[in-house]
Length: 264
Image (cartoon, rainbow, N blue to C red; front, side, top):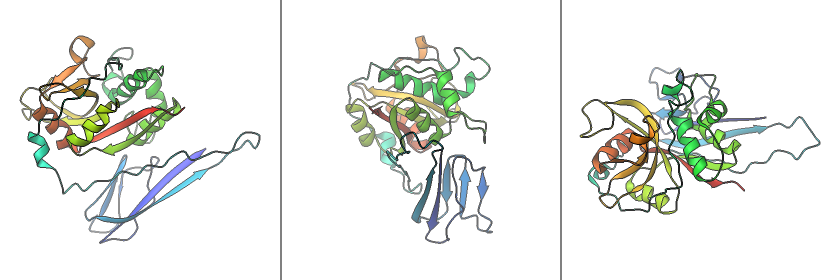
């Protein structure tokens, strides 16, 4: 059994509470509300200077090998610094990662389908690496009982690790970084959001939050994606204009699951 908690210290406030996947949404008790924990991330009103991680592992069976730490990842970004230039940037062309199959989040579970974009995107990427996985299986592995969600970021990465895939959450931030991953054959599970009439040619009217798989950049700079919200005849190898995808992704923070491959 393992538990992971972390806390941050800001330049204008002391240490936050210990926070983690089991923590319900909360604010610091001070009147200034200098930090806020929201499902799977902490937001602060001033830059953080330090962070600490409390990792505890317990094995109840002495006959088996003791637990080991393979890696610890901590990702951060300065939300006040946003590269506006990337919204008008034409990204460099990359090879298309064709090994990733398209899956639709609405197939197999009509009741939960609207909530399964994260586990469905994970299942697509894992299958691209030759790991058998279904959206329903990944949903069970990634389910967060505290918030009744299937798309909590650290739980998604942990679910992928249970299928022997190594990954982390990263604020990608710009096209240069995204292209580096794509050229290495690493698809990105991108977190997007956009309001009605915000994009010029969106595949659907709006979304408050959605995850899909970025597979590459074509010769015209268009982002080529597998969108689990759409059936295969519409969502497979779906192309977005550079400006639209930049607004939906970088304008929403530029966050992605980076699943780098098998752990073996």
